[in-house]
Amino acid sequence: MPRAAVLGSPIAHSLSPVLHNAGYAALQLEDWEYTKFDVTDLPAFLETVGEEYLGFSVTMPLKFDALTCSDIVSERAELIGSANTLVRTDDGWRADNTDAEGVLGALAELLGEAEPTSALLIGAGGTARPVLWGLAQRGVTDVTVLNRSDRLAELRPLSDALGLKLRAITFTEDLVGVARSVDLIVSTVPSAALDGHLTQLAKAPVFDVIYDPWPTPLTVYAAADGFVTVGGHIMLAHQAFSQFEQFTGHTAPRTEMLAALNAALA
Image 1 (cartoon, rainbow, N blue to C red):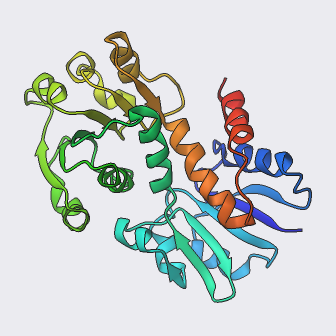
Image 2: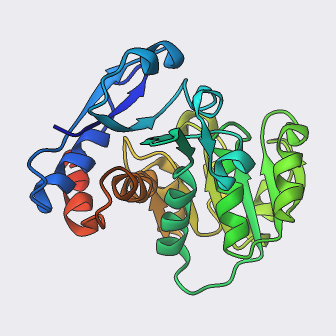
């Protein structure tokens, strides 16, 4: 029986099994099964896991280990510097980063056919990296990074490779002016981190990577001012579509998978 699973710690909250198992059901892939494992030592796990496991979704804290444990690395995973996908091949484990696909899917829903050139990115942690990749694919050239401390040095190799111009600001600056000047806002931080700043920031279309609980306070404020908003559940779904196709070789039944996710979040 071919199997796949999501790996990380903690892992109980993961909705990846909902997405993937809905896909198997929709395509009548009755032999396939997707589960979850609480894993903190990825190399040890991969050494002992059975050959029936053909792919893994990888979440924190293992996304950096997934790169070093793999035998083959996709170009985008190497560029972004982390991987959320491991696929068994004849030549060993291949690492990819489908969070990048998730970002593109969320941006497509947020922007439609618009051609943005500027963005405000809130947060500079691990999720910021695939977001920068996705913004560059959509034609964005200028990104303002809002963070409590200046972490541009960590993002600079990636931004330079993508041809992005970055500048750093903190929460003490003119947030209203910045938010009004950009084509979109992407938040990668917990909602509580924005307490006291919501009215200043909600001045443009918003993609918030948080999906539980949804809607987030930032998207509520932005929507109240008439701006389009998209949540992290869209990113989650689109990264899973790509994983599903890499694991099974079948086109992901997107409608059914997204419906199952929305039902789980309701």
